[in-house]
Image (cartoon, rainbow, N blue to C red; front, top):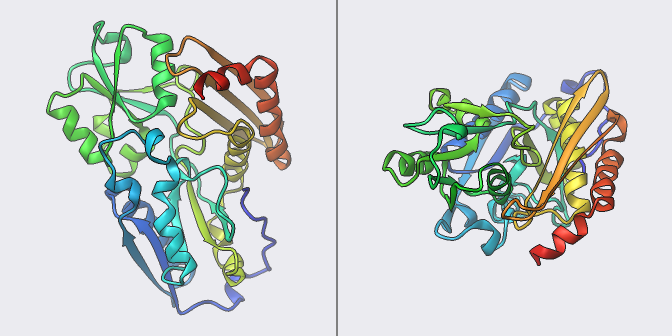
Length: 322
């Protein structure tokens, strides 16, 4: 579902400003950074409003010994937060957009997309400078079928093993020697001040990012129309359009964490360019396509890209994954 389009009044601060806002967030360090970031933005916009954070442990945070694709997918990271929105314990929830399911449950809407941080994947290792430096048979950790398929396509001799847990847990497992290298989202490392752990970033040409990677999303109960104007200043128009196009492509291809696919859109002077791919898990079958259009037609552009991939045989690859 796309972000709701909001027409701002001349002075949004002149509207009825709530005395208190509660932000629902996962309790991982990265999620709490994101929540505090939005908290600070809101407190700057509305100095008289008390902005609190409700930290929550989600099902996705609790199940760490099984790949997400096998236990219910990305929705496990937002379910409890949506329950807090539904019962009034929280007014808004902050998500990493790459963790938000392509179709939200009825009764919830995305109302803002924050400006994107670096969307690329990061190569993290204590002994090697890049993927190209890894010896044959090296163990690389990743939680993503998207990353796995692209890694296997380029480096079929590497051994890919599942890596779950929050960012600190993943880094600890690397430091304990369980992996020669791990692949993480650069945005998370940057936001937590861990840029020095990045040995190299992987270009989108070699590792197309996850849909929405690097962007933050604000979700509310759809009945809370009183929050639309209040939260509108948090929206970054170019990032919103890019993420809308990416999500539209993924949605059209029934994308989830059980499907190795990715999409990355950029916006320049109101024009979008989006590249997406679909692959088999082993990377032996991969399709990559690019589409261009205007920012105002982000949704249709994403669907167009999906149609281009289908025309090249995406359905055959998707059928192999069933």
